Image (cartoon, rainbow, N blue to C red; front, side, top):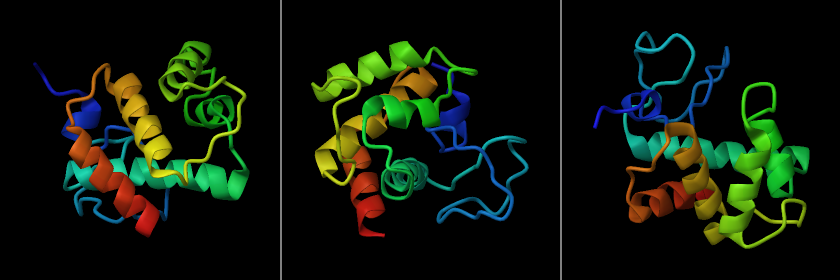
Length: 139
């Protein structure tokens, strides 16, 4: 199977480049993609995805699946309601039930679900996602 853009960039969350923001583990050469950050290793791209989710929670009080996904994948660009429903079902919560990405298992499920939605699949082993989430929580 041909790698997706997110997989080629080691950025399975498809994090946009932000002027002045340099992610830990980002490649020095960002010329491979005009829109999305390119990382040296998948673990660092997945870590960045998890760090972003933690920032949504900590800084912007995004504490439900709906609040998180509406910010991650705005309705202007995505089928956000289906995205929300799928992730809520994976977490076994309602779309508007409070959740905490500070809980490692919750953050792992959110991260893997976003990878799956962004790429149409998840080619990463659970152990790699767990490692990336643990790095995000530790930093």
